[in-house]
Image (cartoon, rainbow, N blue to C red; front, side, top):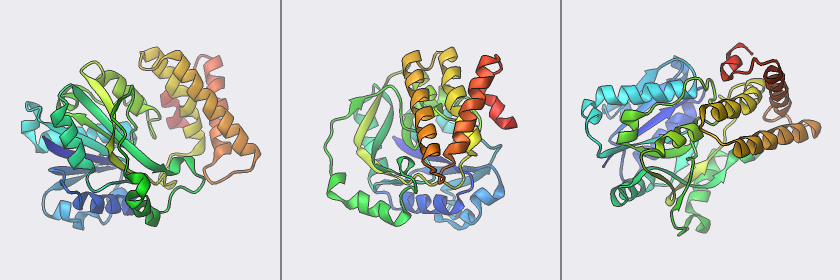
Length: 301
């Protein structure tokens, strides 16, 4: 199976360059890489990277928004590689620009897809996730996690209902049939869960520990706290109505986020604008009560 990679990025040209270096050092290099920014500064300096200079990748600018940018990446891939529109012996990996994959991530993904033809999507084992830390994980620590003994895991692949968007791969037939929901704008909170729900109609999803890496959880380039907080309420409720997320899961997710934002605001934690997120939560709840709740409202906040 031919491996391809799509990276959507905003405000993180330096982080994206490091990710491209990681991809260049994969034991199985991607056949083609598409990097999608929302403005020129998002891809500044990447034109000299070997993937681009050697015509093994492409830089694209689209409208801002994770779903919009990923869809632009898919369309670019299908345009530059027209044979993919009919072939199915390929897969696409979506990496966040601040994800650092183990050297064999793509090779292990290819192996798993090849040996398990009922599988349409996989996500890897995240050895450390800076999203859950106040300051994220420094770049220089990523290699320490990747080479530590804890990285040598032999967990059996397990069936899952959703894939973690920072490192997920889908079989080519899913790319031919599905697109990310652009009604989930900006940071597109829970877009990975929604996409996975639709992909499940065509096969199974698995978490594969052999594909592992580190998610730095870099803060720069994120959407504002208020917008993110609004999405933490609006997006799960939208997905309930759409049928992509069950009520219990949505309520648990929203409650957890509101509680976390409240606690960290009271404690004065300011690194990730938890007070802004809490304000966004409140604004979304107010819109819900008034019957005006819509994920797209974040564009006007």
